[in-house]
Length: 315
Ligand code: SF4
Image (cartoon, rainbow, N blue to C red):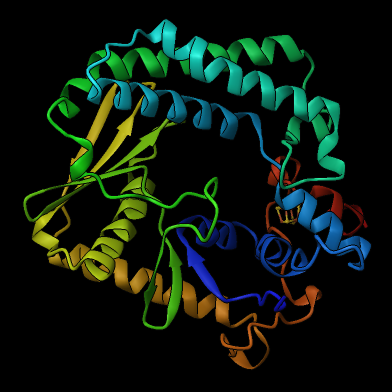
């Protein structure tokens, strides 16, 4: 079998990581590469394992999103679902399974297959049951809000209008497009067409960050333009804040579209400065020491890679 090659890629979340801490990009994109192989170094294996690690808020979002997508599909099939049913059928089993996996520790052998939560790994929870209850309350609230506030807006959409999105849970590569020679990952949650219009929705179970989310969805608009030939004036974007029961609907002006292209181009340029000879095709990282640690180390305790950076942070 041909050996996998690390390809230079960009995504909104990778750009955020890179902005917050250069070293984090190094661990998550370069040091981890090949860490799944038996012959990999300890550092590679650790970076790979830590890169796969999740956290409780990420898990909360996944549980809420799985539950509401199930509600939506059932709704399209003519079946009315209550919030309690969605919680008991989808969200609770998912959370229970992931939480147990994290405590059981099978992820040590198979970090890609089994969940490891950062809070367990770094022993950050004082009360496991209280943490579980908090997540459960938030997920239930998201599902209730979705059914009462959001779902009526999707009542007329049928499956034939939907655009299939390749997610990391599916086999094969995740949703992406190629922009000026760069592979760009863009994984919106729910997309459908109405005539020539493309409607792009992103569920948010966490805190409202309108500015940041607007920019994230602007990169999804670029995906719709490049991959589906959508015209900017026909693209409708929606950030759906599940906990608050609010939606931020918007379209991009020509100026904002241009700003998005500039943002992406500049971010790719800055990332390329950390490659040998700026060569994205070769995609070989400069030495680890050249990837700066976070300026503000207070965020390090909330970072998956704390274990790897710790000797330098305390030294
Ligand atoms: S632990 Fe701190 S310095 Fe290391 S990757 Fe994470 S944020 Fe950056």
